[in-house]
Image 1 (cartoon, helix red, strand yellow):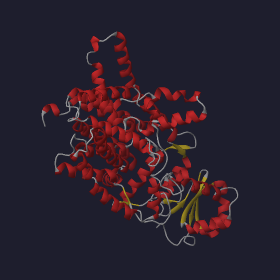
Image 2: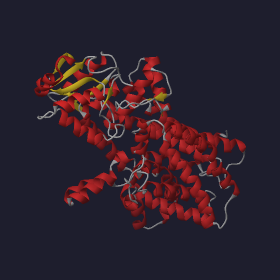
Image 3: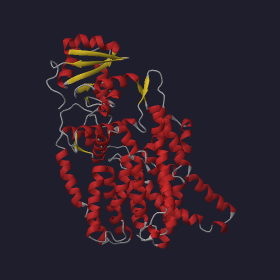
Image 4: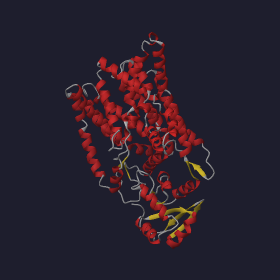
Length: 534
């Protein structure tokens, strides 16, 4: 590698700052003092999903199989989920003794550094000028929109409008790469997206068989790490071919060949997926990937802000200069906008992929805006300075909101901690617990729950309601007995003031009762269950 193609030493300060700011919420979680009657979960981000990550990581600690079962349902199933990332974390946990929670949070750091290493390599042919490449990397790392300035005004809007604003501009959607860096899976997905698209986005497609094979293997790896990123690769490759036909009035043979190279890995993925879909639990969970939850382009002026202005200027410059990668980057951005607007694929899953290509194009616009700075009038300089200043605050707002979420989302009832500690010492079985506790149990114990995770539990909302009825004031005796037998329940958690009613119904089938604050843990004997979880 030519010395000028190597990233300058100062370049690595960029991922270092991102790592530091993105780990602050986890460090803050470790320092939280619980409220009276509560405990601190100590998860850095989005417990409702990170707990599922921990549950699969824990499975890989206990058994080194590449195939996972869904622990958030007691329905009959075979292990057909494939999660290489969680498998790797689980094996590292088994090897080092580090907790899955720690490994999940720490994994963010090396992944961010790998991402920026791949980004520098990816940008070399697109932005040969080192200074422009550095600008692009800085924009990818830190630039964002103005949602942090706009969101406080939600209180002045009608309820429906306020809900739309807050729901569509939140940092958890990943409107900037900095915001998206909270999720290690997303960082891995972005990295693999870059590596796979690198040969596909060349002006005339992959140059040789090696690059074709690399694209095919890249798609295969991307799918098993983060399927939504694999969809992005397919969409971008296809959009690039179609865009050439529309705007250049031809279909480039190399680009078409690059897109065609994705057919073989897709066929293999399809074959494996057909096998996975034979299991009813996997089939139900995978069906949840489809849905109408889209994010409209309407929000882009807010969520991209000044970055969008610089990107439009960069696009204009590339068109004038006839930059060889202009169509590839435009197709990339267009494909993501179409995906996150999808009313079929739950488009919100693709938002985190948009910022990266926009920031690359914006780097060109920012370079042009500061070129000849001293030759411009005062108004032009002030306008440019204002736009540049508007790029920076986003990462601070995201960090602030992340810290606020930690304080809000990490508080759980202290009784939950006690119940989990007790369950951890008991043989694996099916547990009937409240949905909020059910989201915790598989993350920290070897048990399966009947209701827990919002996505991985079939009909999670209906099941949560059904539990409330079973544990409510008016208990249907016959229904409870039938439920306990049909679902092979070995452990049940119920509010202390309802325990006597359950004991009266279940009788000597309860072999042990343990009280933990406001909750009671009931251990059911073999007269209720013939076998453990299947």
